[in-house]
View (cartoon, rainbow, N blue to C red):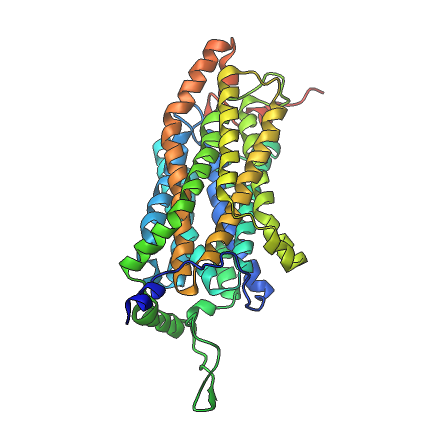
Length: 452
């Protein structure tokens, strides 16, 4: 092979940039499966975020400790899994997501000590780290609409879990433990959706459905899932496995656009886990503890709007979705940083008159990060050829996890600093922290009987 041929073979970037796929549309059940995958992964993740203050109720442990437990294992998995995950059958990966999710939630619900609850969070975190890498890589075998469907599902999961948790614990007066156990049972849907979807990944993604040799048309013989998984594994080792040189080359070409992803996710999680946790208002129509529930609900509600717009447009008119892509990731990252700076100044100087401004800006911050997410997925999918796409799509989450994990560590210092400064400025320190001072106070409002 000549030098020029080697350079062509090892250069995954498409010079044309954003180009629509010419593949025919996927069946609705496959698109729906990817939507549910995204929804379940992010619902389990955001449920822990929504319940962070209740997990730590009665303590002054930094809220970011929940984020450390929630993102640490996830980040480690997303960092190393793309290097070997291609050799593990998809069904094994999905079973791992289910078992770790169930185990983590059971420990979170039944453990009494905070450190055991945080360990349960970590076990669940490992599971959705595996899930994130698995499902993003899986989209590489299907039409581009599956990426948009998965992205929309993540947005739905982001809003469903906080809405569910807020409704159950704040409005319906169900205990946090029961709320978590009900959610754990929903993970069974992962198996249902995997069974229902088309199994394109069980065959070679590069081989056509039928081929010709000597003028005679050959059609592949259908096999069962076990045989197909074994065949796929062998094909990957012989033909489709990427060398470490190729993988590092892909990462180096992704790096300039992974940096704004890192910054945006750092800003998002600094906002929701370290800054707005110190913003409560005496004139608000709800308790300081409930401030956090509404902040998270509104912020992640904005994310579902941002993450869903491309999949909605693609089913209204495919050309609209292509034109609505926004590949300028640095612009979106800068907007999210501006949100973070505003919230930091608000928490430090306490110049906001009411909670409604925080809620509005929480929504716009969520929309920004949601739009960023779906465009980042579309950007990298369109930039890489099929041979490299599975690895590239699985590696995007490294930047997201890295930004989130860094935010959790910085937040360990930031939140106590803002809270102590607030206690100096305000006479009533109840409004310097969006957390119940004792675990029994979480449900105290439900126990108060209204006057007759």
